Length: 620
Image 1 (spheres, rainbow, N blue to C red):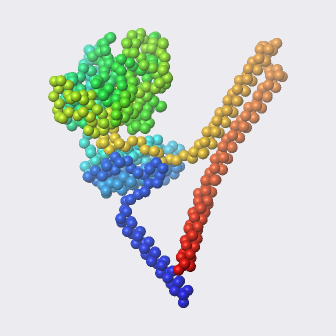
Image 2 (tube, rainbow, N blue to C red; image 1 turned 30 degrees about the vertical axis):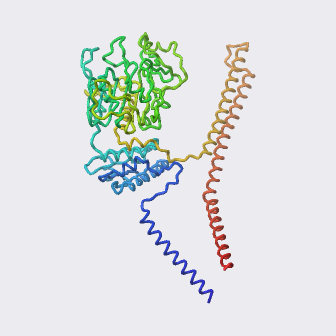
Image 3 (tube, rainbow, N blue to C red; image 1 turned 135 degrees about the horizontal axis):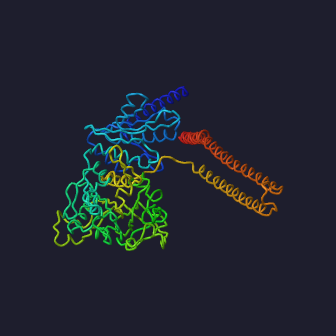
């Protein structure tokens, strides 16, 4: 009877626990709906605060159409893994948007309506080659007013900016009106009369690109105020600005305004500076107050990145004052420069950080160690292109040519506006919101000849970029005119987790391979030297046949070469075997060891719990 009662009690307890488990699951499902716990090392699935704020501010629905070719991507497992990462991020965006983002996952089949719609959106399919189907891997977004924005193809190389790109797309759909950029320039960006040729000059291509994407408001250099409603300010070669305009720029930036500033110690394309005239520009006292050191009397040369220019007799020579900065010089952690290849500069200056409390100085473009300052007087006295090479002595330092300045900037006019200037509003002695500036110590990089080749095709002028100068300007303005939320979203860590031990094995094997290759080259050189000595020591030097001694030497070298090749194959084979063994160990750990460990822990917990129950039963 006691046994039956115990069994019944056990069954009843099990039923009660099952009911409680189901009930608790239902309650938690409703009370904790949307809650997530990110246990990844770099918090890959946790959105940036700026993204959360952007999603929380959505007022209208946004439709996202994620296109990915499931079947066609089977031969590319790395791309499929990244597609999973993208989809998870989009699902997180939708979950955090309060229902305003509607995510649609589309697998475009060949010759289907989905494929036609993807093409209509402006997405691009990338062919694998070998006759395989192309892969669709992009995102299209629409809003309630028929606005559209797309990411043509998700590039795995830009993974660290994945969240920024998606947030930017949503921001464009949420605020479809074109941003307003004020352009203040003493250079003829918009074209005009050219005193040198006596004719009209075409607008610079970079100005046309900016006008296509933004609403441009031109500001005269002799103005005393800035127009209202600017989303960003683009200042190029500021010379002779009135005190009122300089003060207006200071207050605009301190009030949260964003600015792209291009100053130059030697502006070659300044139409107002004739032969021997001062072609430098600066923005003092603003730059000094904001923690930016810049000397308009010194330019920068870089032998490592020197470009070819026309020299004496038409022969191209490398001029250290004309430089092209690419891989290794462009900041990969900033959205402005991360995707760029090369930016060309002519007689640029350089920037240096000066300590100002609360101000951040982040380099965007940096020279190589083969760099050195060049006095601008020396540039103007240079007789011919390439003559600067003589006596050029690199300092071994890297110099900053472009930088991002952010933080709570102090005013360049702490005591109030300059004499005779009437402020448009209350004077700001310090920024009321974090400022965001991009400063470039060059203006020549904007000129067409520095980055595009213009040809005529069927009567139309076609500009073919040879560098990313224009992309830099567009990226900077696009980033600066974005919301404050977007400015706070920078590169995130990647989700790929390489096998570090495997990589170390590869590195060690590569070192051994290089060592063997070096040994082979040394033996080859030694054998050739001996063969030459034998050839010179022969009595009959006109003979084309080898002596027996030479033949033995050649045969010995051939055997050495075969032996070293066998050793090279052995190194590669050992590498593969070590990696395979490591993979086997990992599989055993994942498939066998971990379940065994978990089972043992569960068993131990069960045994301890049973003993405690028995102990309590005995005590009672």
